[in-house]
Length: 407
Image 1: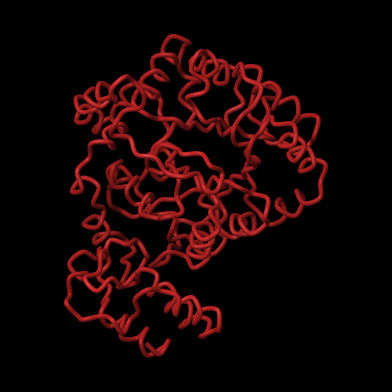
Image 2: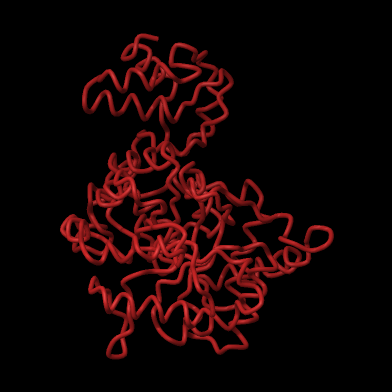
């Protein structure tokens, strides 16, 4: 499904590889974001590890070299397959310090297949294997592998497995603790734990419409999408942005590239890779989009992001045709900005939605008061209306905010 974009992007990508800072270094067109409060700066797009299992060592080196030369500096390694880990280790030799590694704890290769474990001895063997095959004695982010239910989250607490993770950080074998999840409710609990610094979360225009703590592949989950972004997801994103917790995105293209083809898209319309990436990065809590890359051509296509025009990144026209229709609900995507009066429209809408849903609380009032501009500052100029992808009557919402919050 991705092949139709590859030839289109190849020439521009080759230009990107050659576009380097004077005297070497990262490609000048790659942009970087803070990884939460870790002190690390990561490239907006980064590498998923799955494709390395399909490559030989020479092809792995070629892929990694192009990625690094183009400014990519982040990789997620969830795959415990020996070939995958060995290929990445081979490809990083001599350039290890240029790549920030997000490696998973609790993923092992057993009986010829990928297995998740919370057994300490198994997890230890799997992690030591990761370090050995990568030819390194540490990784930057130690990611607790897939926690998708409240029961799994509870089981981790005060467990020998979690003690082992803390021990790895104390020993310097991991610099920061992370956790991966597809469940917004669990991800929010992790964010509020006080010890999770980075969260790997599945985010795209379709998954944002999942209800509550639904996991994408649960039976019927994708058949019952709601109009706007789920309130739990909104709270999770807002909490991470406010508390500087890094969020790395998986399933950027809908899982297996489903969003790139109208026939498989969960929303019934096709997005481009650039539109999917732009959708994710519009969220201020997002640090990087991890992209599944199977070969050099796919990497070249993905690197077109560095040179994509604003028109190519604009997902709003696609959003107008999404099914189910968003029906005028704000998704806090910030495409309405900048407001001519300086109002943070998305944040006002978010606080208003919460107040209308749960009632006006002192905390919501305080958050609203702290905004530099408010609903009462709206001039009804209408500039935002032409940019909103979902048909939100923004001036009316600003009037409602003035009524709700008093100014």
